[in-house]
Image 1 (tube, helix red, strand yellow):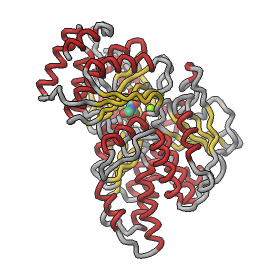
Image 2: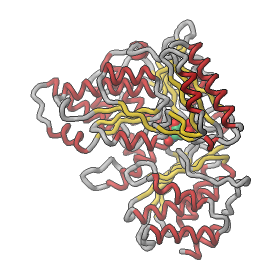
Image 3: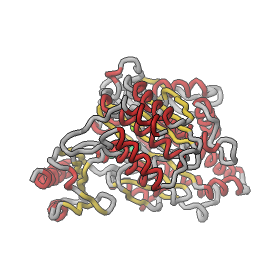
Length: 542
Ligand code: 16G
Ligand code: MG
């Protein structure tokens, strides 16, 4: 194996970053300009092999995508056997392999990891992979394939997939044929599972009007169209208009459309012209984020982001659990990050009376905390999230004998939702179906949904600094522990505003810091954000 790795590695020399900088496996794996990525994908392939052997031959996933980033970027990340993100302890091994300066050093590090973790390199191993629509994808998958060939790893290349579809397939592969089977091991199996669960969760309810779905000109478009074709329309009248579905012209990916554009610009996609008061939503480039919105006749834009989806799900699931007679048995909780609007946190904890926990940014953090509940709802404000059902919750739903038709409905709908909602990772298609189910059951329009509470005015600012690594946080990123003195200055500013909150953190995906501020009015939120931004600028450019 060593000889094969050495020989193939010569075709993928790593490009040094210069300035003493190293590649790091960040919040979303390795992500950068696509032309730097082939050697990284080769090395990630070696790690996927090691991970598969370490996990006793279970199948590991590799996804090639740069999500909401522009078309020239790409990225690569590893998916663990149950469809979760790579275990955090392993990120350092990914970083070590990728930064090896020479082929010889690469093999040395590879062997060191294998012996440190007592990995049996003779075990059979298996990796499956998917990619988004970026033109750089095939070349990167080829580099991955070479690493898997050098390590005798069984490999299936699924070609185009949304990120959540790959997560589904990894879990389905590893649970195939056992009682916890996650579904059929095929892309069609994914559509079948969602379509069946969607119809059951609807429980005869009707969906009102057309839903316009902006697919960011990415992979979500062809996959959503496939899903809609698999949906028996006689059983559920779901009218969807798919827009921004151009996956032929690479430059338009995520350009002036998509969930990230809508959320950060706080406006509808530049095109198509919105239907006044029509119901719309946007996916991001790999279809794991979802944002809803509408524009009224006066062209006023209103948005329902991840916090709204999370509070809507908490409201609906809370009622169903109560109706199912399981309120005292099943613990429901909501997990957010510091970016969650304070009004959503107050609504969930005070009005819905559910526990809310704050974690650092990044799906892996939220996911793990949500697993501690029987029904754990987690969303980032940017629209990435899902709802996790624990094994105890599933068995309670399956074994409770209903005493009335109403209780039976609640149990059936909850079970259907546990199949509808992707249990491995946030999934725009699945989350969209969840929202549609809830709106249909409640008979709500988007403005009814928006009326549940009023968002606090808020502002997010991006600040270029000399060295973002000077900034270290504590308390789930809500406070700066470094540089010394900076947090005191922030506290001092926040004190001067009503209902205010502000925090600063180094981005995990760009060389910049972000400042978030919220306050009683828009002008105060803006003013506070500017003042905190100036503090960060001063400390970051010393
Ligand atoms: C990544 C994360 C996302 C997070 C964002 C924050 C995953 C799959 N993605 O895109 O959850 O919100 O980073 O970016 O974990 P930032 O650190 O630049 O603010
Ligand atoms: Mg994404």
